[in-house]
Image (cartoon, rainbow, N blue to C red; front, side):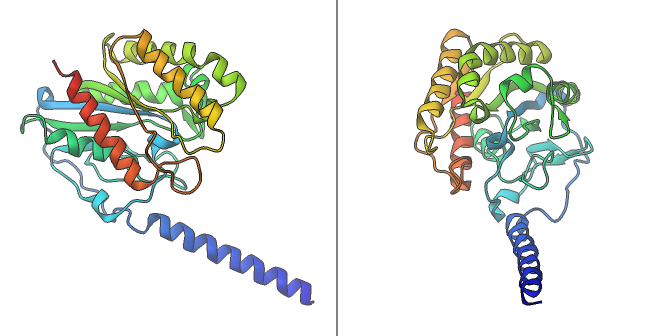
Length: 274
């Protein structure tokens, strides 16, 4: 009887602890959605597609500052409605989603572009996805990756002009097989992205994966492949993440690092504007 009582106590404790952990993760999530009533003129909307895996989908802690909307920064919600952007932007993995770099990117960008320009952020990243899964249009965590990307691009074209892709991915490919084909497959995927967007010179801005992993050798090899893709293809721009910190799991960027990544991507994009 004593052992049964201990087992019941453990189960209850585990359940409560999980609930408390979940509440902590979502405590600052927005309590309301702000729909866009007046859609800006298409010629004044710059669209950016967010793609990749979990560090683009966002796993960092959302703080109140990350949920303050701006009338010049828009996004799409789960049902495809145009909304004023608040973190978290991604909605494909509700049990995991957190702060990504998207809103930080847009906030930094609007400080340096004409006041009449609105930014539209389109989330398509899904955690744990490999470059092979993207390239083969695999279904991952209930999302058909490339098909979803294409459908979101078509929606985006109705609202504005696609100005770039923000990409962060590679952690799922830090293994011998993934590393051996990564450069070729990433180059091919970027070509597919540009074909879908209708712009063969579309800027693609990518962040290297973090430098905090215990598997430093393989993570460094992926970063070398990412850099090689940028060197061999035009209009691909890479930002460094070597000084950024993880949230304690040796995989995902923390909140401050996500905001810094957004800022760096914005600076890099501005350097591409002719």
